[in-house]
Image 1 (cartoon, chains in turn brown, yellow):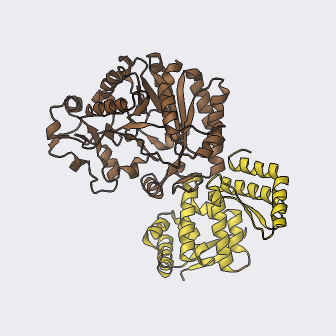
Image 2 (image 1 turned 30 degrees about the vertical axis):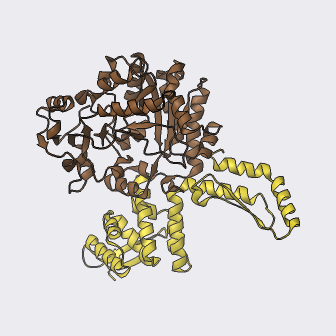
Image 3 (image 1 turned 45 degrees about the vertical axis):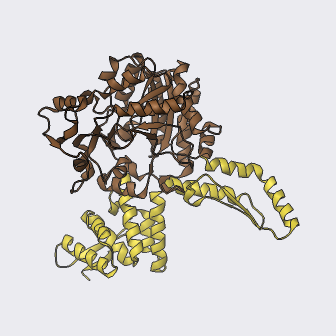
Length: 367
Length: 198
Protein backbone atom coordinates (compact mmCIF):
# COMPACT_ATOMS: atom_id res chain seq x y z
CA UNK A 1 0.00 0.00 0.00
CA UNK A 2 1.17 3.47 -0.68
CA UNK A 3 1.24 5.37 2.59
CA UNK A 4 2.55 8.87 3.00
CA UNK A 5 5.73 9.41 4.97
CA UNK A 6 6.97 12.83 6.07
CA UNK A 7 10.31 11.54 7.29
CA UNK A 8 12.26 8.41 8.09
CA UNK A 9 14.62 8.33 11.06
CA UNK A 10 17.22 5.61 11.40
CA UNK A 11 19.10 5.06 14.60
CA UNK A 12 22.86 5.40 14.08
CA UNK A 13 23.61 1.98 15.52
CA UNK A 14 21.09 0.33 13.19
CA UNK A 15 22.08 1.88 9.87
CA UNK A 16 23.84 -1.20 8.62
CA UNK A 17 21.14 -3.68 9.58
CA UNK A 18 19.41 -5.50 6.75
CA UNK A 19 16.06 -3.99 7.68
CA UNK A 20 17.35 -0.41 7.75
CA UNK A 21 19.01 -0.90 4.39
CA UNK A 22 15.89 -2.33 2.84
CA UNK A 23 13.79 0.54 4.13
CA UNK A 24 16.30 3.17 3.03
CA UNK A 25 16.38 1.66 -0.47
CA UNK A 26 12.59 1.48 -0.64
CA UNK A 27 12.03 5.04 0.62
CA UNK A 28 14.51 6.64 -1.80
CA UNK A 29 13.09 10.07 -2.64
CA UNK A 30 9.68 9.57 -1.08
CA UNK A 31 10.76 11.09 2.22
CA UNK A 32 13.92 12.55 3.76
CA UNK A 33 16.01 10.09 5.76
CA UNK A 34 17.72 11.32 8.89
CA UNK A 35 20.13 9.46 11.14
CA UNK A 36 19.59 9.92 14.84
CA UNK A 37 21.45 8.79 17.94
CA UNK A 38 18.34 7.63 19.77
CA UNK A 39 15.19 6.62 17.91
CA UNK A 40 13.07 7.17 20.98
CA UNK A 41 13.41 10.92 20.52
CA UNK A 42 11.70 11.28 17.12
CA UNK A 43 9.19 8.62 18.19
CA UNK A 44 7.84 10.91 20.90
CA UNK A 45 4.78 13.05 20.40
CA UNK A 46 5.52 16.35 18.72
CA UNK A 47 3.59 19.50 19.48
CA UNK A 48 0.72 20.10 17.12
CA UNK A 49 -2.97 19.70 16.62
CA UNK A 50 -2.83 15.97 15.94
CA UNK A 51 0.47 14.48 17.02
CA UNK A 52 -0.92 10.97 16.59
CA UNK A 53 -1.51 11.53 12.87
CA UNK A 54 1.89 13.15 12.54
CA UNK A 55 3.45 10.16 14.27
CA UNK A 56 2.02 7.82 11.68
CA UNK A 57 3.98 9.64 8.98
CA UNK A 58 7.28 9.56 10.90
CA UNK A 59 8.88 6.16 10.50
CA UNK A 60 11.58 5.36 13.01
CA UNK A 61 13.87 2.41 12.41
CA UNK A 62 15.31 1.65 15.81
CA UNK A 63 16.46 -0.96 18.25
CA UNK A 64 13.83 -2.34 20.61
CA UNK A 65 15.10 -2.12 24.14
CA UNK A 66 12.43 -4.20 25.85
CA UNK A 67 11.24 -7.77 25.24
CA UNK A 68 9.47 -8.47 21.97
CA UNK A 69 7.16 -11.22 23.13
CA UNK A 70 4.49 -10.67 25.74
CA UNK A 71 1.02 -11.77 26.66
CA UNK A 72 -1.70 -9.92 24.80
CA UNK A 73 -2.17 -6.52 26.49
CA UNK A 74 -5.94 -6.91 26.23
CA UNK A 75 -5.82 -9.90 28.56
CA UNK A 76 -7.35 -9.70 32.01
CA UNK A 77 -8.58 -12.09 34.68
CA UNK A 78 -12.08 -10.68 34.25
CA UNK A 79 -12.21 -11.80 30.61
CA UNK A 80 -12.26 -15.20 28.93
CA UNK A 81 -9.04 -14.78 26.94
CA UNK A 82 -7.62 -16.64 23.98
CA UNK A 83 -4.05 -17.24 25.17
CA UNK A 84 -2.58 -15.08 22.42
CA UNK A 85 1.07 -14.10 22.55
CA UNK A 86 2.05 -10.82 21.01
CA UNK A 87 5.35 -10.21 19.25
CA UNK A 88 5.92 -6.48 18.97
CA UNK A 89 7.92 -5.83 15.81
CA UNK A 90 6.49 -2.37 15.21
CA UNK A 91 4.43 0.23 17.01
CA UNK A 92 1.68 2.34 15.45
CA UNK A 93 0.24 1.85 12.03
CA UNK A 94 0.04 3.86 8.82
CA UNK A 95 -3.68 3.21 8.57
CA UNK A 96 -6.04 5.22 10.71
CA UNK A 97 -9.16 3.59 12.11
CA UNK A 98 -11.25 6.03 14.07
CA UNK A 99 -11.85 3.55 16.87
CA UNK A 100 -8.24 2.34 17.18
CA UNK A 101 -6.98 1.88 20.74
CA UNK A 102 -3.53 3.04 19.68
CA UNK A 103 -4.84 6.61 19.76
CA UNK A 104 -4.63 6.31 23.52
CA UNK A 105 -2.13 3.47 23.91
CA UNK A 106 0.76 5.09 22.03
CA UNK A 107 -0.30 8.72 22.44
CA UNK A 108 3.02 9.64 24.07
CA UNK A 109 5.12 7.75 21.51
CA UNK A 110 3.16 7.90 18.28
CA UNK A 111 6.10 7.64 15.89
CA UNK A 112 5.76 4.62 13.61
CA UNK A 113 8.53 2.51 15.09
CA UNK A 114 9.99 -0.52 13.33
CA UNK A 115 12.48 -2.58 15.28
CA UNK A 116 15.61 -3.50 13.39
CA UNK A 117 16.74 -6.09 15.94
CA UNK A 118 13.56 -8.12 15.35
CA UNK A 119 15.59 -11.35 15.11
CA UNK A 120 16.11 -11.09 18.88
CA UNK A 121 12.44 -12.04 19.13
CA UNK A 122 13.31 -15.48 17.79
CA UNK A 123 15.56 -16.12 20.78
CA UNK A 124 12.70 -15.20 23.10
CA UNK A 125 10.44 -17.60 21.24
CA UNK A 126 13.01 -20.37 21.55
CA UNK A 127 13.08 -19.85 25.31
CA UNK A 128 9.28 -19.94 25.52
CA UNK A 129 9.09 -23.11 23.44
CA UNK A 130 11.90 -24.70 25.47
CA UNK A 131 10.10 -24.01 28.77
CA UNK A 132 6.91 -25.73 27.62
CA UNK A 133 7.99 -28.26 24.98
CA UNK A 134 4.58 -29.95 24.81
CA UNK A 135 2.57 -26.81 24.22
CA UNK A 136 1.60 -25.07 21.03
CA UNK A 137 1.63 -21.29 20.91
CA UNK A 138 -0.06 -18.78 18.66
CA UNK A 139 2.08 -15.69 18.26
CA UNK A 140 0.87 -12.59 16.46
CA UNK A 141 2.53 -9.43 15.20
CA UNK A 142 -0.65 -7.46 14.63
CA UNK A 143 -1.43 -6.02 18.03
CA UNK A 144 0.44 -2.70 18.12
CA UNK A 145 0.77 -2.47 14.35
CA UNK A 146 -0.72 -4.02 11.24
CA UNK A 147 1.31 -7.11 10.36
CA UNK A 148 1.52 -6.38 6.64
CA UNK A 149 0.98 -2.64 6.15
CA UNK A 150 4.58 -1.91 5.18
CA UNK A 151 5.61 -5.40 4.19
CA UNK A 152 6.50 -4.43 0.64
CA UNK A 153 9.01 -2.04 2.12
CA UNK A 154 10.31 -4.10 5.04
CA UNK A 155 10.06 -7.64 3.70
CA UNK A 156 9.65 -8.77 7.31
CA UNK A 157 7.03 -11.38 6.53
CA UNK A 158 9.51 -13.43 4.51
CA UNK A 159 11.88 -13.75 7.44
CA UNK A 160 9.09 -14.50 9.86
CA UNK A 161 7.61 -17.17 7.62
CA UNK A 162 11.02 -18.77 7.12
CA UNK A 163 11.46 -18.98 10.89
CA UNK A 164 7.98 -20.25 11.78
CA UNK A 165 7.87 -22.74 8.91
CA UNK A 166 10.56 -24.67 10.78
CA UNK A 167 8.82 -24.59 14.18
CA UNK A 168 6.32 -27.34 14.69
CA UNK A 169 4.75 -25.93 17.84
CA UNK A 170 4.75 -22.25 17.05
CA UNK A 171 2.10 -20.73 14.84
CA UNK A 172 2.55 -17.23 13.47
CA UNK A 173 -0.55 -15.08 13.03
CA UNK A 174 -0.20 -12.14 10.66
CA UNK A 175 -3.15 -9.87 11.36
CA UNK A 176 -4.02 -7.19 8.83
CA UNK A 177 -6.56 -4.88 7.24
CA UNK A 178 -4.59 -4.66 4.02
CA UNK A 179 -4.40 -6.75 0.88
CA UNK A 180 -0.62 -6.51 0.84
CA UNK A 181 0.13 -10.18 0.41
CA UNK A 182 2.76 -10.11 -2.33
CA UNK A 183 5.58 -11.40 -0.14
CA UNK A 184 3.40 -14.18 1.22
CA UNK A 185 2.55 -15.68 -2.12
CA UNK A 186 6.09 -16.73 -2.93
CA UNK A 187 6.92 -18.15 0.51
CA UNK A 188 6.14 -21.62 1.78
CA UNK A 189 4.54 -21.47 5.25
CA UNK A 190 4.34 -25.26 5.59
CA UNK A 191 0.98 -24.80 7.28
CA UNK A 192 2.50 -22.94 10.20
CA UNK A 193 1.46 -19.44 9.32
CA UNK A 194 -1.99 -18.08 9.68
CA UNK A 195 -3.12 -14.84 8.10
CA UNK A 196 -6.10 -13.15 9.67
CA UNK A 197 -8.19 -10.22 8.62
CA UNK A 198 -10.31 -7.89 10.64
CA UNK A 199 -13.62 -7.64 8.83
CA UNK A 200 -16.27 -4.96 9.06
CA UNK A 201 -19.24 -4.16 6.88
CA UNK A 202 -18.66 -1.76 4.01
CA UNK A 203 -20.35 1.08 5.90
CA UNK A 204 -17.91 0.84 8.80
CA UNK A 205 -15.01 0.67 6.39
CA UNK A 206 -16.18 3.81 4.59
CA UNK A 207 -16.70 5.91 7.68
CA UNK A 208 -14.07 4.62 10.05
CA UNK A 209 -11.28 2.48 8.61
CA UNK A 210 -9.23 5.07 6.81
CA UNK A 211 -6.54 3.95 4.37
CA UNK A 212 -7.36 0.27 4.83
CA UNK A 213 -8.30 -2.14 2.05
CA UNK A 214 -12.04 -2.51 1.38
CA UNK A 215 -13.66 -5.55 3.00
CA UNK A 216 -14.12 -7.31 -0.34
CA UNK A 217 -10.43 -6.84 -1.14
CA UNK A 218 -9.47 -8.31 2.23
CA UNK A 219 -11.66 -11.35 1.61
CA UNK A 220 -10.19 -11.79 -1.84
CA UNK A 221 -6.68 -11.53 -0.41
CA UNK A 222 -7.64 -14.23 2.10
CA UNK A 223 -8.73 -16.48 -0.73
CA UNK A 224 -5.40 -16.02 -2.46
CA UNK A 225 -3.26 -16.78 0.59
CA UNK A 226 -5.44 -19.76 1.36
CA UNK A 227 -4.68 -21.10 -2.10
CA UNK A 228 -1.00 -20.44 -1.42
CA UNK A 229 -0.97 -22.75 1.60
CA UNK A 230 -1.73 -20.42 4.46
CA UNK A 231 -4.48 -20.84 7.00
CA UNK A 232 -6.89 -17.95 7.34
CA UNK A 233 -8.94 -16.55 10.20
CA UNK A 234 -11.23 -13.56 10.66
CA UNK A 235 -11.75 -11.10 13.46
CA UNK A 236 -15.11 -9.37 13.69
CA UNK A 237 -13.73 -6.80 16.02
CA UNK A 238 -14.89 -4.23 16.75
CA UNK A 239 -18.50 -5.05 16.12
CA UNK A 240 -20.30 -1.71 15.96
CA UNK A 241 -23.99 -1.50 16.72
CA UNK A 242 -25.06 1.08 14.15
CA UNK A 243 -28.64 1.07 12.91
CA UNK A 244 -28.27 -1.44 10.07
CA UNK A 245 -25.62 -3.53 11.78
CA UNK A 246 -27.70 -6.67 12.25
CA UNK A 247 -28.42 -7.00 8.57
CA UNK A 248 -25.04 -5.84 7.32
CA UNK A 249 -22.92 -8.14 9.50
CA UNK A 250 -25.05 -11.05 8.28
CA UNK A 251 -24.51 -9.93 4.68
CA UNK A 252 -20.79 -9.62 5.29
CA UNK A 253 -20.68 -13.23 6.45
CA UNK A 254 -22.74 -14.36 3.49
CA UNK A 255 -20.20 -12.75 1.19
CA UNK A 256 -17.30 -14.25 3.12
CA UNK A 257 -18.73 -17.76 2.83
CA UNK A 258 -19.36 -17.27 -0.88
CA UNK A 259 -15.64 -16.66 -1.38
CA UNK A 260 -14.15 -18.88 1.29
CA UNK A 261 -15.73 -22.14 2.34
CA UNK A 262 -16.37 -22.07 6.10
CA UNK A 263 -14.49 -25.31 6.62
CA UNK A 264 -11.36 -23.56 5.34
CA UNK A 265 -11.51 -20.95 8.09
CA UNK A 266 -9.21 -21.76 11.00
CA UNK A 267 -11.17 -19.74 13.55
CA UNK A 268 -12.99 -16.47 14.08
CA UNK A 269 -13.17 -13.98 16.90
CA UNK A 270 -15.74 -11.41 17.91
CA UNK A 271 -15.36 -8.30 20.03
CA UNK A 272 -17.54 -5.28 20.56
CA UNK A 273 -16.48 -1.68 20.18
CA UNK A 274 -15.00 -0.74 23.54
CA UNK A 275 -13.37 2.50 24.48
CA UNK A 276 -12.03 3.91 27.68
CA UNK A 277 -13.36 7.42 28.24
CA UNK A 278 -9.89 8.69 27.35
CA UNK A 279 -9.86 6.81 24.06
CA UNK A 280 -13.34 7.98 23.24
CA UNK A 281 -12.36 11.58 23.87
CA UNK A 282 -9.27 11.22 21.69
CA UNK A 283 -11.22 9.49 18.93
CA UNK A 284 -14.05 12.04 19.01
CA UNK A 285 -11.52 14.85 18.90
CA UNK A 286 -9.83 13.36 15.83
CA UNK A 287 -13.00 12.13 14.10
CA UNK A 288 -15.82 14.45 15.19
CA UNK A 289 -18.05 13.51 12.23
CA UNK A 290 -17.73 9.74 12.56
CA UNK A 291 -21.16 8.30 13.46
CA UNK A 292 -19.68 4.90 14.32
CA UNK A 293 -18.18 6.36 17.48
CA UNK A 294 -21.67 7.23 18.63
CA UNK A 295 -23.46 3.96 18.96
CA UNK A 296 -25.51 3.33 22.08
CA UNK A 297 -22.66 2.73 24.47
CA UNK A 298 -22.74 2.90 28.24
CA UNK A 299 -20.01 2.76 30.85
CA UNK A 300 -19.51 -0.92 31.63
CA UNK A 301 -18.16 -2.41 34.84
CA UNK A 302 -14.63 -2.62 33.41
CA UNK A 303 -14.53 1.15 32.94
CA UNK A 304 -14.95 0.98 29.18
CA UNK A 305 -17.76 2.35 27.09
CA UNK A 306 -19.51 -0.54 25.41
CA UNK A 307 -22.74 -1.04 23.51
CA UNK A 308 -25.43 -1.85 26.08
CA UNK A 309 -25.41 -5.56 26.78
CA UNK A 310 -28.53 -7.02 25.09
CA UNK A 311 -27.78 -5.29 21.80
CA UNK A 312 -24.09 -6.15 21.90
CA UNK A 313 -24.78 -9.80 22.60
CA UNK A 314 -27.48 -9.95 19.96
CA UNK A 315 -24.93 -8.88 17.35
CA UNK A 316 -22.41 -11.43 18.62
CA UNK A 317 -25.05 -14.12 18.29
CA UNK A 318 -25.84 -13.13 14.72
CA UNK A 319 -22.20 -13.71 13.80
CA UNK A 320 -21.79 -16.89 15.84
CA UNK A 321 -25.07 -18.31 14.49
CA UNK A 322 -23.99 -17.65 10.93
CA UNK A 323 -20.92 -19.80 11.51
CA UNK A 324 -23.03 -22.41 13.30
CA UNK A 325 -25.47 -22.57 10.41
CA UNK A 326 -22.61 -23.01 7.95
CA UNK A 327 -22.62 -26.64 9.04
CA UNK A 328 -19.00 -27.02 10.11
CA UNK A 329 -17.53 -26.42 13.51
CA UNK A 330 -15.35 -23.36 13.16
CA UNK A 331 -13.76 -22.46 16.51
CA UNK A 332 -14.69 -19.02 17.76
CA UNK A 333 -13.82 -16.90 20.73
CA UNK A 334 -14.72 -13.51 22.16
CA UNK A 335 -12.21 -10.78 22.84
CA UNK A 336 -12.40 -8.87 26.14
CA UNK A 337 -15.65 -10.39 27.30
CA UNK A 338 -16.57 -12.23 30.47
CA UNK A 339 -17.02 -16.00 30.62
CA UNK A 340 -20.79 -15.54 31.09
CA UNK A 341 -20.98 -13.69 27.79
CA UNK A 342 -18.98 -16.42 26.07
CA UNK A 343 -21.44 -18.97 27.40
CA UNK A 344 -24.43 -16.98 26.19
CA UNK A 345 -22.98 -16.60 22.70
CA UNK A 346 -21.45 -20.03 22.15
CA UNK A 347 -23.63 -22.07 24.48
CA UNK A 348 -20.74 -23.40 26.56
CA UNK A 349 -18.35 -22.09 29.17
CA UNK A 350 -14.99 -21.07 27.72
CA UNK A 351 -11.91 -23.15 28.30
CA UNK A 352 -8.90 -21.64 30.03
CA UNK A 353 -6.83 -19.15 28.01
CA UNK A 354 -3.99 -21.65 27.74
CA UNK A 355 -6.34 -24.31 26.40
CA UNK A 356 -7.95 -21.95 23.90
CA UNK A 357 -4.53 -20.73 22.80
CA UNK A 358 -3.36 -24.30 22.35
CA UNK A 359 -6.50 -25.22 20.42
CA UNK A 360 -6.24 -22.25 18.06
CA UNK A 361 -2.54 -22.88 17.46
CA UNK A 362 -3.19 -26.54 16.70
CA UNK A 363 -6.03 -25.83 14.33
CA UNK A 364 -3.73 -26.61 11.45
CA UNK A 365 -4.17 -30.26 12.33
CA UNK A 366 -7.74 -29.94 11.11
CA UNK A 367 -6.64 -29.23 7.55
CA UNK B 1 -32.50 41.53 25.74
CA UNK B 2 -32.00 41.74 22.01
CA UNK B 3 -34.22 38.81 21.30
CA UNK B 4 -37.98 38.58 21.48
CA UNK B 5 -39.83 35.32 21.19
CA UNK B 6 -42.96 35.18 19.11
CA UNK B 7 -45.34 32.38 18.47
CA UNK B 8 -45.50 31.01 14.92
CA UNK B 9 -48.58 29.78 13.09
CA UNK B 10 -47.88 26.19 14.00
CA UNK B 11 -47.30 26.91 17.65
CA UNK B 12 -43.51 26.89 17.34
CA UNK B 13 -41.60 29.95 18.32
CA UNK B 14 -38.86 31.73 16.49
CA UNK B 15 -36.72 34.72 17.19
CA UNK B 16 -37.12 38.32 16.20
CA UNK B 17 -34.08 40.48 15.88
CA UNK B 18 -33.62 44.12 16.70
CA UNK B 19 -30.58 46.05 15.70
CA UNK B 20 -27.36 44.23 14.87
CA UNK B 21 -26.98 41.36 12.39
CA UNK B 22 -28.53 38.09 13.49
CA UNK B 23 -25.27 36.16 13.83
CA UNK B 24 -23.67 38.83 16.01
CA UNK B 25 -26.73 39.12 18.21
CA UNK B 26 -27.02 35.40 18.68
CA UNK B 27 -23.38 35.09 19.61
CA UNK B 28 -23.63 38.00 22.04
CA UNK B 29 -26.62 36.42 23.70
CA UNK B 30 -24.97 32.98 23.77
CA UNK B 31 -21.87 34.46 25.37
CA UNK B 32 -23.94 36.40 27.87
CA UNK B 33 -25.84 33.30 28.94
CA UNK B 34 -22.64 31.23 29.03
CA UNK B 35 -21.03 33.87 31.23
CA UNK B 36 -24.03 33.99 33.55
CA UNK B 37 -24.00 30.20 33.88
CA UNK B 38 -20.18 29.90 34.13
CA UNK B 39 -20.30 27.56 31.18
CA UNK B 40 -16.84 26.01 30.58
CA UNK B 41 -15.14 27.22 27.43
CA UNK B 42 -15.18 23.88 25.54
CA UNK B 43 -18.96 23.78 25.84
CA UNK B 44 -19.30 27.38 24.74
CA UNK B 45 -17.08 26.57 21.77
CA UNK B 46 -19.30 23.61 20.95
CA UNK B 47 -22.35 25.87 21.03
CA UNK B 48 -20.75 28.55 18.88
CA UNK B 49 -19.61 25.91 16.38
CA UNK B 50 -23.23 25.13 15.53
CA UNK B 51 -24.77 26.73 12.48
CA UNK B 52 -26.59 29.99 13.13
CA UNK B 53 -30.03 28.44 13.07
CA UNK B 54 -29.02 25.83 15.62
CA UNK B 55 -27.24 28.35 17.85
CA UNK B 56 -30.38 30.42 17.94
CA UNK B 57 -32.68 27.46 18.51
CA UNK B 58 -30.65 26.22 21.45
CA UNK B 59 -30.35 29.71 22.89
CA UNK B 60 -34.07 30.09 22.77
CA UNK B 61 -34.76 26.83 24.56
CA UNK B 62 -31.99 27.42 27.11
CA UNK B 63 -33.53 30.77 27.99
CA UNK B 64 -37.13 29.56 27.94
CA UNK B 65 -36.46 26.57 30.19
CA UNK B 66 -33.83 28.41 32.22
CA UNK B 67 -31.39 25.55 31.78
CA UNK B 68 -28.77 25.19 34.48
CA UNK B 69 -25.08 24.79 33.63
CA UNK B 70 -25.10 21.00 33.88
CA UNK B 71 -28.21 20.82 31.77
CA UNK B 72 -26.70 23.06 29.11
CA UNK B 73 -23.56 20.93 28.89
CA UNK B 74 -25.57 17.70 28.82
CA UNK B 75 -27.93 19.03 26.17
CA UNK B 76 -25.08 20.35 24.01
CA UNK B 77 -23.31 17.00 24.14
CA UNK B 78 -26.46 15.05 23.36
CA UNK B 79 -27.40 17.40 20.53
CA UNK B 80 -23.97 17.18 18.98
CA UNK B 81 -23.91 13.39 19.12
CA UNK B 82 -27.42 13.02 17.74
CA UNK B 83 -26.70 15.46 14.94
CA UNK B 84 -23.55 13.58 13.88
CA UNK B 85 -25.11 10.15 14.12
CA UNK B 86 -28.36 11.08 12.40
CA UNK B 87 -26.78 13.53 9.92
CA UNK B 88 -29.08 16.34 10.89
CA UNK B 89 -28.60 19.67 12.57
CA UNK B 90 -29.46 20.73 16.09
CA UNK B 91 -32.19 23.12 15.01
CA UNK B 92 -34.05 20.24 13.36
CA UNK B 93 -33.64 18.08 16.45
CA UNK B 94 -35.03 20.87 18.63
CA UNK B 95 -37.92 21.41 16.22
CA UNK B 96 -39.17 17.84 16.75
CA UNK B 97 -42.76 17.75 18.04
CA UNK B 98 -41.86 16.18 21.38
CA UNK B 99 -39.41 18.99 22.10
CA UNK B 100 -41.70 21.73 20.78
CA UNK B 101 -44.30 20.41 23.22
CA UNK B 102 -41.87 20.71 26.15
CA UNK B 103 -41.00 24.24 25.11
CA UNK B 104 -44.53 25.39 24.84
CA UNK B 105 -46.57 23.58 27.42
CA UNK B 106 -47.33 24.89 30.86
CA UNK B 107 -45.42 23.68 33.88
CA UNK B 108 -42.40 24.78 35.81
CA UNK B 109 -39.25 25.57 33.90
CA UNK B 110 -37.10 23.17 36.00
CA UNK B 111 -39.50 20.29 35.33
CA UNK B 112 -39.54 21.03 31.62
CA UNK B 113 -35.74 21.36 31.62
CA UNK B 114 -35.46 17.86 33.10
CA UNK B 115 -37.93 16.59 30.54
CA UNK B 116 -35.88 18.11 27.73
CA UNK B 117 -32.75 16.27 28.85
CA UNK B 118 -34.68 13.03 29.20
CA UNK B 119 -36.18 13.46 25.73
CA UNK B 120 -32.79 14.14 24.17
CA UNK B 121 -31.32 11.14 25.99
CA UNK B 122 -34.13 8.94 24.67
CA UNK B 123 -33.36 10.09 21.15
CA UNK B 124 -29.63 9.57 21.63
CA UNK B 125 -30.18 6.04 22.99
CA UNK B 126 -33.39 4.84 21.30
CA UNK B 127 -32.68 1.12 21.38
CA UNK B 128 -31.44 1.24 24.95
CA UNK B 129 -34.64 3.02 25.93
CA UNK B 130 -36.80 0.56 24.04
CA UNK B 131 -35.02 -2.49 25.47
CA UNK B 132 -35.07 -1.09 29.00
CA UNK B 133 -38.79 -0.40 28.71
CA UNK B 134 -39.45 -3.91 27.45
CA UNK B 135 -37.41 -5.49 30.24
CA UNK B 136 -39.02 -3.29 32.88
CA UNK B 137 -42.42 -4.37 31.56
CA UNK B 138 -41.43 -8.01 31.84
CA UNK B 139 -40.36 -7.41 35.45
CA UNK B 140 -43.65 -5.66 36.24
CA UNK B 141 -45.52 -8.62 34.80
CA UNK B 142 -43.88 -10.84 37.40
CA UNK B 143 -46.11 -9.19 40.01
CA UNK B 144 -43.62 -9.97 42.71
CA UNK B 145 -44.82 -9.99 46.29
CA UNK B 146 -43.52 -7.47 48.79
CA UNK B 147 -39.93 -8.18 49.88
CA UNK B 148 -38.69 -9.46 46.53
CA UNK B 149 -37.20 -7.22 43.88
CA UNK B 150 -35.72 -7.93 40.49
CA UNK B 151 -33.41 -5.16 39.35
CA UNK B 152 -31.86 -4.63 35.94
CA UNK B 153 -28.22 -3.56 35.66
CA UNK B 154 -27.96 0.20 35.38
CA UNK B 155 -28.19 1.24 31.72
CA UNK B 156 -28.06 -2.48 30.87
CA UNK B 157 -24.31 -2.28 31.26
CA UNK B 158 -23.92 -5.96 32.11
CA UNK B 159 -25.85 -9.22 31.80
CA UNK B 160 -26.34 -9.59 35.54
CA UNK B 161 -29.85 -9.49 36.97
CA UNK B 162 -30.04 -8.68 40.68
CA UNK B 163 -32.70 -10.45 42.72
CA UNK B 164 -33.14 -9.22 46.27
CA UNK B 165 -35.13 -11.01 48.95
CA UNK B 166 -35.90 -9.27 52.22
CA UNK B 167 -37.13 -11.51 55.01
CA UNK B 168 -37.47 -11.25 58.75
CA UNK B 169 -39.07 -14.63 59.44
CA UNK B 170 -38.57 -18.15 58.14
CA UNK B 171 -42.11 -18.19 56.85
CA UNK B 172 -41.32 -15.15 54.73
CA UNK B 173 -38.27 -16.93 53.34
CA UNK B 174 -40.39 -19.94 52.42
CA UNK B 175 -42.93 -17.67 50.78
CA UNK B 176 -40.24 -15.81 48.81
CA UNK B 177 -38.65 -19.04 47.57
CA UNK B 178 -42.04 -20.31 46.54
CA UNK B 179 -42.87 -17.05 44.77
CA UNK B 180 -39.59 -17.09 42.87
CA UNK B 181 -39.97 -20.75 41.97
CA UNK B 182 -43.44 -20.08 40.61
CA UNK B 183 -41.97 -17.36 38.40
CA UNK B 184 -38.85 -19.24 37.37
CA UNK B 185 -39.73 -19.45 33.69
CA UNK B 186 -40.59 -15.75 33.45
CA UNK B 187 -37.40 -14.75 35.27
CA UNK B 188 -35.37 -17.06 33.03
CA UNK B 189 -36.88 -15.28 30.06
CA UNK B 190 -35.78 -11.92 31.46
CA UNK B 191 -32.26 -13.29 31.92
CA UNK B 192 -32.30 -14.43 28.30
CA UNK B 193 -33.58 -11.04 27.15
CA UNK B 194 -30.75 -9.40 29.04
CA UNK B 195 -28.39 -11.58 27.06
CA UNK B 196 -29.77 -10.36 23.76
CA UNK B 197 -32.46 -12.95 23.06
CA UNK B 198 -35.75 -11.55 21.88
